[in-house]
Structures are given as C-alpha cells and as structure tokens.
Image (cartoon, rainbow, N blue to C red; front, side, top):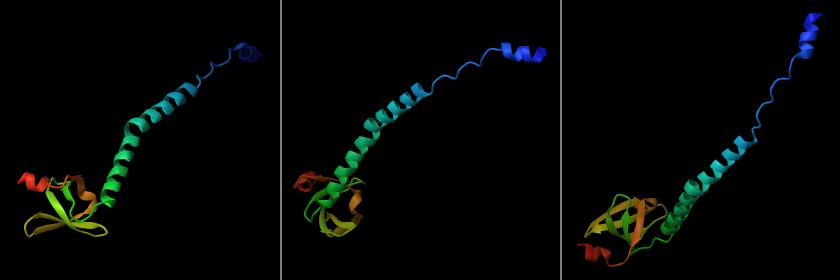
Length: 109
C-alpha cells in the first residue's frame, strides 16, 4: 500500500513551454526573407522578361558574356547579334543582359 501513497503524493510533471513564440518567430523570419530576397528577385526576373520580349532588329545590346553588338534578326528563342562587319553570332534571347542607347557601338570603337 505504500506504493499507492507515494504515487498519490507525487507532484504533477512540469508543463511543456508553448510552441507559439517559436512559430511566430519562424513566421517573421519567412516574411523578412520574402521581402528582402525573393520579392526583389521576382521583380528583376519580370523586368528581364519584359526586356527580352521587347527586343527588335536594330537594338544595340550587351550579352551576358559582355559582348556589344547590334541585333540583326529576332527569332522565337534566339537572336542574331552582329558584333563586327560580317561577324554575326546567334545567342539565346535570355542571354541578352541589357539594351544600350543607339550609337553606343559607334562611340565605343
């Protein structure tokens, strides 16, 4: 009978701490991550898609490799870029880094 008395007099186990503060901090971390990293990258991707869709023959561009040239032909996935007289390369549209103002090629040489 002593074992019944011992278990009856035992104290309750300590309660587990609430998980709510940890979940709130995790949620705040995700929100901060979203606004500082993901959202700006999505904005840059959207701007680049608009740039690629607006390419036309005659535009002067810089490729992702740093080559400066003039677009001579625009296809569905590729563009032809003239780097010098009688030197034309085909590159993917998405490898066009930026469109530069007209006359940049003439002033660069």
